[in-house]
Length: 127
Image (cartoon, rainbow, N blue to C red; front, side):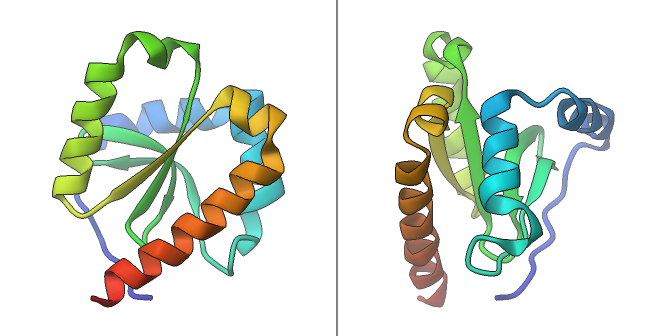
């Protein structure tokens, strides 16, 4: 897969660095147990990646795929999350979302679904 460079707001770099240092348990679990060191289908993911005016929890540049792990606060910001996803989709980034609860209580299910989403995304990009 080809790497694609997307522009980002450079002012978000410091926030992304802070987010990496203060990651919550579900984010750390997904990172260390599934995404780091090319564990998922040999794909490289990065943590807390600025894209446009947003910071994605995880990002795979070769697939233009972002993964968001939503905590309880996201239940109060559905409209914002939907707009954010719409804007990222508009520049070609597909967003996959899981909740903190899903990651911690059904990790194998999340990984299975994520693998399926990667496969779907690869097919989408072939077209």
